[in-house]
Image (tube, rainbow, N blue to C red; front, side, top):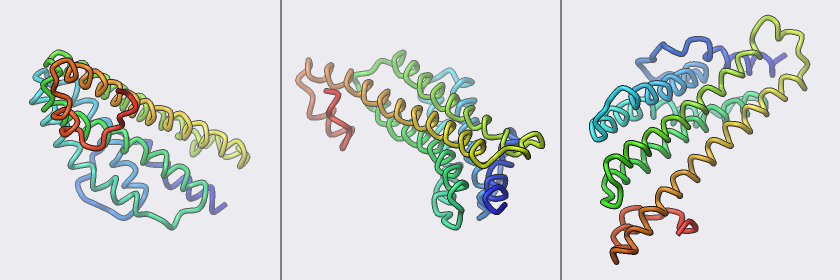
Length: 209
């Protein structure tokens, strides 16, 4: 019963995607809701601003506002095993946003990308973030009245399925980032300017070039 209540507490937040929290709270439910809201707002902002630089400035503003919830949810430790898995799934959505913002702000300084390419890259990031955030909707079924007859195994099967899917998107975002960096590296190599490119990205994964 404790396991089911803990999971339910974390998942109730999935019912109202359009609300936006205005303050930091210690309740994992509200923290999780804020992370999902932030991810959705980043996606929405990415699709409504046409200028690449202005677009990113607005997106980063949303990200900075939401990061406090991501950091706070990471610090929550007193959860039972099943609820911990839900927490990790939600945090991976925040991590995808983190990879997007931190990598893309460096790409904006990279002379090896055109503005058109930067726009396309941002679109790719926002779509991957949107898809991973949408996967959390599958967790809503756990707290619906029709789910009260679910066994613990059925409940965990849903949680594990969503966890694996979001993890796949998280890994795909990492791969997407590295492949874009490999394009920059090849272009820098042709110009004999690889050192500046490597200095810009610091500890980027060099396996892709």
